Length: 270
Length: 75
Ligand SMILES: Cc1ncc(C[n+]2csc(CCOP(=O)(O)OP(=O)(O)O)c2C)c(N)n1
Ligand code: SF4
Ligand code: SF4
Ligand code: SF4
Ligand SMILES: [Mg+2]
Image 1: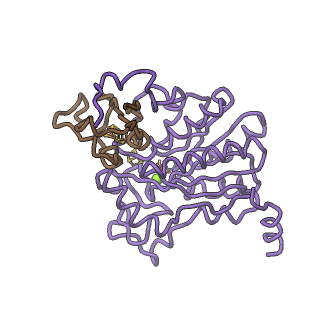
Image 2: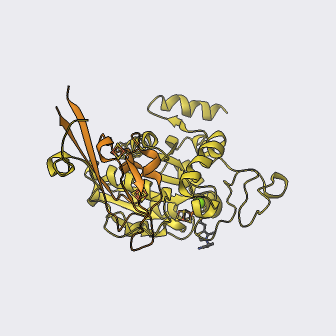
Image 3: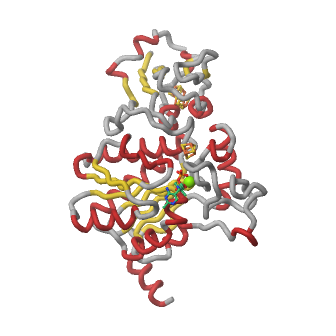
């Protein structure tokens, strides 16, 4: 190895990565290893890179990320449980020059807020939706969510989710991809550096879509909740890779840039 | 031949000791300290500083954004 002192490496001119200024200095209340922190960072970095800090309005949910407004230094509105897409609809329609996004957990978006998200996507509201799917209600102590996997134990399904009793886990991303109002629908993750980079690209693309007035961009991030899952953060990423990815396959489900007219025609023909 | 050397600075007091940076590092540079910080977490540090290549993988996966990365070419 070449000979150089550490203190000669740690110099301003050699800086390659530091925390974005769009994140505040508030210490996040999230548990160690929580995916929410990584996704907050990516949203903040995209806002910084696009230079839209003054023009962006976030709508935070009810769930662990209820305090997102403490961490990303932009304007925010806090919505009632599940209603973020309705609040975002109003904000974007009243202030079309703003960049508006919702940030929602799976309990918030797929359970109590199922109607709001489906109708906002169906109307093709020109907003970005960031959907953190950790297959559980993290905030309230790890109860079963609509997204909980079959057989997955939670506080309210101690023997694991059973189809006959609890129904099937819902794939919200595939569902909203069928709606003609959505332009970009993708499922990503943040468990390793390559995945983090891809998710950031997807978030950037979603905000660019909004700038171009293309309709709803929907980004699911398959996430961990080590506290709810009762494993350590490293094990949680492994569990997610082994169990969540096969049921929630990563990748783009829809990208209207490819052919919006074809999508719409297919939909109208049935 | 030019070689790349990197270094990271972890904010010890803000690190939550989740260990995600440790497994994300391709060069086994990082370990968690035996000592704990003020919050009781085993904070991350460069155990093998000469191995770091400044790839920033650790910083990308850190949920608390407490890692700063530096990189330099040395001949
Ligand atoms: C109207 C209403 N119903 C129920 C609750 C209780 N509650 C708070 S957060 C939450 C679910 C959170 O789960 P999720 O959206 O998946 O977010 P996570 O904490 O997992 O990120 C529930 C049911 C509430 N606060 N308000
Ligand atoms: S309970 Fe789960 S979702 Fe909430 S902060 Fe902790 S790890 Fe994250
Ligand atoms: S910058 Fe890359 S090589 Fe250096 S500690 Fe971080 S992950 Fe490891
Ligand atoms: S990823 Fe961040 S918070 Fe977790 S151990 Fe490493 S430096 Fe600490
Ligand atoms: Mg959840």
